[in-house]
Amino acid sequence: MPVQQLFYKTAVPVSAQRHGDLSVSTGKTYAFAGSTNSIPVTAVEFGPAAGDHPIVFAGTGDEIVPAVILGTRDNENLAVDADGKWTGTYIPAFARRYPFIFSLDNDQKRFSLLIDEEFEGANRDGRGERLFDSDGEQTSYLKSLLRFLQDYQAGFVRTQAFCKRLVELDLLTPMQAQFSLAAGEKRTLGGFQVVDREKLKALSDETLGELCRRDEMECIFLHLSSLRHFRRMLEQTNTSGDTAVSDEEPVAEAEPVESA
Image (tube, rainbow, N blue to C red):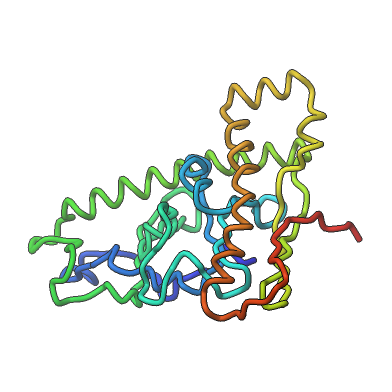
């Protein structure tokens, strides 16, 4: 379940010299995310995201990130319809910030703003918002965008600390989602981890209290509650038109992955 390479194709640094006459029209379509079955989210997004999608943890080691699962197989996003419209109630900030992204320099000290020039909303016809005015100065749109990305980056750093805490406490366990479709087809979606309820219950009172004081327990509960949406994803798949209906009851459940 890849979560990093996603939909960015040709991201280049934003500059007045290169993008002085560039306009960007966003929010009209999310077709760029139509073949992405998972998207990263930050801890502050758990509340709204948990109302729509299963939240899991992807990656390994120091690269573990929370992500919402959007499809029952690779290259499927049930939240984006055929017209590129996002049909859910919450759109992850990772998708809302596209086609922009921050990049660290070689010294890992300074961020640069990049734009994916292949984004269909990037144009030189005046559609949408200009990045620079006629004098080459940042527009109010670009300034607000920078503030949004700075807030996102701060949230990402806090989320990294949260994930590191889960790893230190050995709370994550590999899982896979099993889907039994109405047409008889079976699908398995793996490559992610979830919080182990039994390990969570076994923590000391002191550790549990610390998780509560840091608001990390709230994130854990939201994550665990969100896993119920695997069932709703199955219902979406069975009504999408690409599967026939049979008398067999569709089933969606998460199961632990046995260690080798």
